[in-house]
Length: 331
Image (cartoon, rainbow, N blue to C red; front, side, top):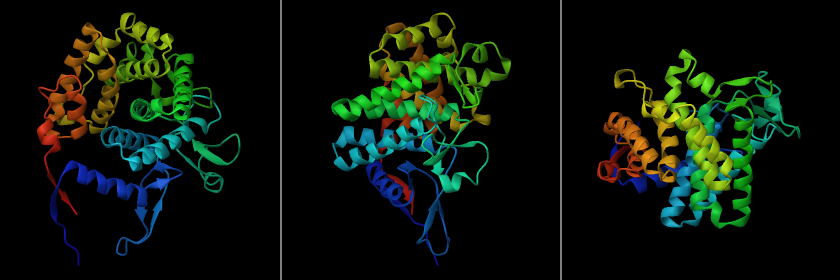
């Protein structure tokens, strides 16, 4: 016999429950991952497997715990964010090619039974999954930004490591014409942010707005964390010479009746850093217009993340009240 009950609770109370469950059931190599109950009728044991989006889910957790620490100074949030961030560093290093990020990792024993998409790490201590997509890279930069802002920049060891990792991932994209090139020497299926694909190939019309936003956000984050002006030069080049700001103005391509909720989330993951970092009035006005267009579509979902991100640039019209009011959670 079971019973579902709607229990009113605040956003903070809900977050504490989710964080407890993450650490109890969803950790693997420090990554935040899916778990499967071994027996649904007796939920006392579970298995945590690998997933193509292990890096993305873990990056969201880094951001959440970094922001939690920034707001509360809770050392448990800091420790949890650090565990997840170091797991992302592991994914960034697993391939042995600086900047080529893995989707996930497994033990050698598991890896030997998997497809050719899985490759042994140079030290042969694990297998890493290739063909990483733009989704995962999007998450890594959100993690870079939030972890730097609230934790890493105030700790010399974490500061140095974060700068090094941001340089490696960003330089790898720049060295390959804004593309993520795999161990095969070919671009990964979805790892592209280059003008030839986004501006010149009609097949990638739907990606042109989101991916333009992503690469601009990546470069802004890289410049902010490293202080290296070459990233800002690439940022300006994509805007001035390749019209990426125009692409961003129409970043939200799908109408609500054919909505892609994953792309909505990926869009706001990229919006969050760039809205805080870009202070040029003209560029900021364009970004405001673009994110407002997107927010008007997703506002009815009452996502606290969407509302808080939009409030970065337009607090007057962001629906903060409905995002923080007590809500009912099914337990």
